[in-house]
Length: 117
Image (tube, rainbow, N blue to C red):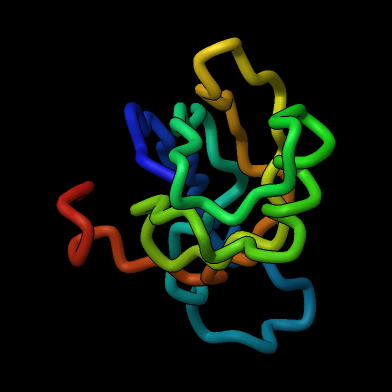
């Protein structure tokens, strides 16, 4: 697959400890951190003749291929392992519209390492 366009982008949220404990168990709030809540965007990929995808090229055949090979697409989203891609459409030129359906992300993300600070 040749990636034509990749506009996947992480959506982060920040957890801040309220620090309001009735039994005074903590002397101060816990450190805040950023975490990944979802990944927006899509990938456009072109199926090439050298790809080992079953013919005819349809949404179900591409979905089946990606289910078996989730690492096939270089997504570029930090700290993320894609578990399942969602194939939304394929056109007559074998260009596929794909989103991330399931992923595992890091619970604590240091945004200073990813030019997001």
